[in-house]
Length: 480
Ligand code: NAI
Image 1 (tube, protein in one colour):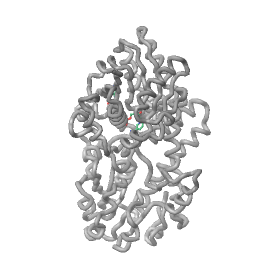
Image 2 (image 1 turned 90 degrees about the vertical axis):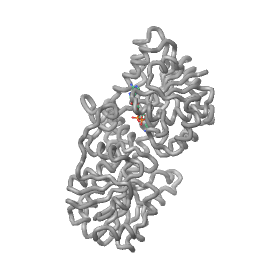
Image 3 (image 1 turned 45 degrees about the vertical axis):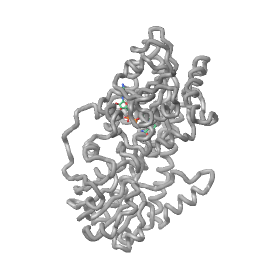
Image 4 (image 1 turned 60 degrees about the horizontal axis):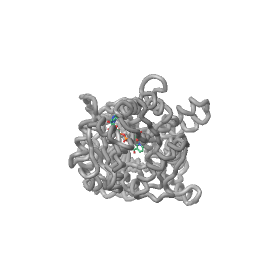
């Protein structure tokens, strides 16, 4: 029986390994982590992450060929294939701070693998890492190996949170990079055989190590670039009276461009896009390519611009001040169907409004008050360092309350900001909400999910991203 161990029981390690266990009953899969609460949660009925379909998959395999454990060393020692899916946050200090990937967690995992191994192993980079990381990992492993042979593979993960299980069941492609040597090829084939249990062979791409590592950064940069492109257009639409939904539909009909990922919004979020682009920028700079670095940096700049623009629009529409006004925030997660708040645009929008002394009442169906308070008191880039391993800061933002439904959040509010596209926000009783709000009542739809015309009929002043502006909003221009 092949034994797999995955170091890192997070958003990637947990779902990915659960699906491997489900699809490969002949393989024993152990997911290990240094975080005791996380592993306890994986072993309970309340999994540590919310992901549609995940509960089902875990329940089918847990205790049979899928195990979650904090006994990292034992499972690594016993494994034939070790996936490393630890976090790779942006460095907060020292060389490359604010851009480069912090490989501390990766390096400590690699050193531990070298320390405890007693047999040859395939070590798989599942985390998103800078191109050429495998070379560094190889050096750590071979210098500490006591004669044991390690083959390093790059197998970046392309799942998207919110659709992780579906993405893992039917991936667009699986990418495996390895050394172009007989041993490297053998390792690539061994990993390919795992995925071949359910993924058609022609969708399993094999490349050299550096192409696989770079492809992941490139894919995220291209995806984020589309969002920043349509968001840049949304600003121009508002200035000209064009409608961004009509423009992106017309643009996306071109088969060379395609319709996906062209929705204008308050900005992209999530743990990966910004971090991976910053990392790409840093790699370009280190390789003497400042023009290429600047090109990709612009994707982040437009994303920041879009979030600022949104805050400015809210404040300027409400007589240039939100001081002491109650603003309801509907949605805090970075997108629907996840409870993940890492780099969510809601953090920057809320901080912007708090900076103008607003009082915020926040509702998200999957995010806890504890998480929201932590996010709003945390410094930039601190979020992806495993804070759950450290004692929680008792700091809270007093102007913020978190409530259990949208009606409570909007009661007596002056304005509503919709920041996550949860389906339930589309079917709210906006007449009831309007009746319970201060007047004039504003809706700022950061995801373009409500029917603005219907809301205007009720009496709301509505701002939708990239859509022709109400007369009210035209009279109160936002300074970007
Ligand atoms: P995460 O933060 O949810 O999980 C990482 C886990 O690794 C944590 O539970 C942490 O306690 C554990 N860990 C850290 N150092 C460890 C060590 N030495 N030994 C054992 N456990 C250790 O991170 P997530 O979101 O799963 O991301 C992991 C990697 O996958 C990152 O490189 C990320 O860029 C990449 N990725 C993430 C995607 C996502 O949607 N979240 C999608 C594709 C790739």
